[in-house]
Image 1: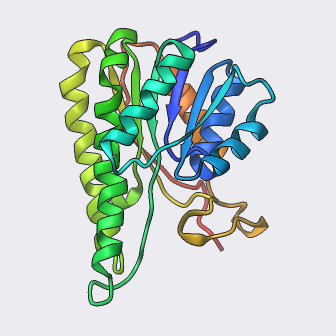
Image 2: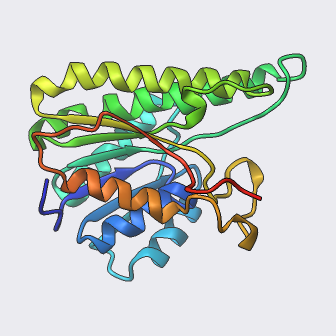
Image 3: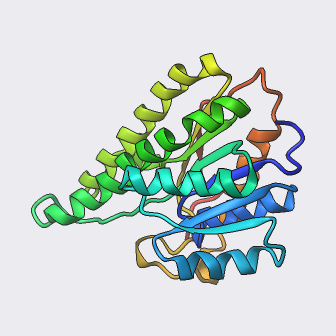
Length: 237
């Protein structure tokens, strides 16, 4: 994986935020990238801004909470590019409220997207990644190891994701597939209806996570950083 030129990455939730930042850095490293969104229009708009060369980026509509949807999307990736080398399971949602007011629908959306969604993406990608001896990177959160009030559902989904990722790392390395989870703290994204601004300059930027993904892919394949916690260097004011 040291030479990333023309390698193919499939990034869920790649139309904005961390997923978009990862896609940008991987394209800058010579990779070809497929990005998904629940909205095909949003995916196409993001793809057009990532590269004017349609052979470098593919826009797809997919709903990660449905295995059939992810299976269809991954087939489109392999049909279009002829291979798959990297899965970045990034799609995620968050609802923050006391357990007293957290709704059943909000709970299910977080579990279905942040946890079951990653299961679906991984299941859909296993066979082509076996062929390429590829890499799975899940985007978890520091909320996957640190609990806090109003985050019962989000904590549950991200604690589960961290455990899931570490377990499949042990399952899949027999096939030469590497698996890592990245656990960011505060990132300047549109997550939870936030609009990034200059006030977010102290936070991790999406491209910083993208560079971390590229660094993992460039790393000597004998070495596997399986779980990575990342925080802003300085606390916000």
